[in-house]
Length: 312
Image 1: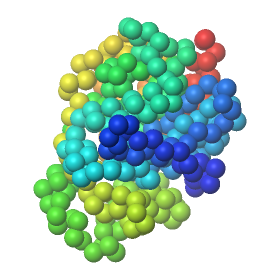
Image 2 (image 1 turned 135 degrees about the horizontal axis):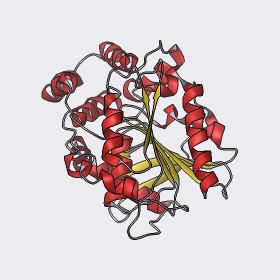
Image 3 (image 1 turned 90 degrees about the horizontal axis):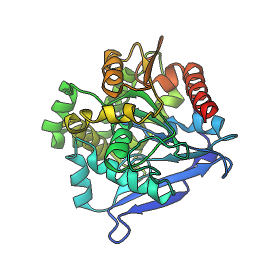
Image 4 (image 1 turned 45 degrees about the horizontal axis):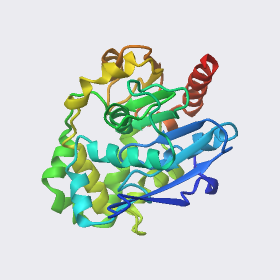
């Protein structure tokens, strides 16, 4: 599933405005009066993973795509900002920056006590974007019309020997020759999929980390996995019930063959959120469910959003 030129990130947002530390590349496509639909990617991906879905739904919805800070075309603007993100395993800083981006787009909380608003955007989040999306709602007051969580990093326990090894040997990994590092990145990416990846998709996913064209590159890849080694969500997991109590429709979609995050995590997350949340397990799909089962995932997203829209 290759991305297309029409999803190129042609807009720029800097944060904070008075002393820019982060630069976010983003775009909007589809009818301006269409209901907003935001796709958020996780680690170590970019918005290009969502490009085919964005294009397919842009005939009806006002689609927002962006690269997270330090991923794809987005970047940190100062050494201090880079260091802060690398050590922010809770993703609270990423949530802060993303919440500011949402506000820049004109999305505000419409109720003082609810994460649910019929005027809010539909949000689709994958991997650690799940934790970011939940933090934005709970800690920055953003309301959504619906929330789709796909193989998300949101409920522990956390910890990976690979992340720990990279975090403890950052300098060593940064000095690995490019051709060898290319193999490391692509091997890691292949492990996220249940089915073999096409050469095109593999290059698309690995590109930002191995291309050497001004994007995050090798040091950026080591940095985001180092951050993952310190992942924590305890402070916000105890608040997930507020999402369910708000009446926000939540669908949790999970690949049954996810080797990174077993599907038992989906059931745990559903219990923590409660309310109208529900779990859908997808056969023959790993963590990269977008590529393993694209038609099934698209159908689940479309049916869920249409169901929510039909209620309003």
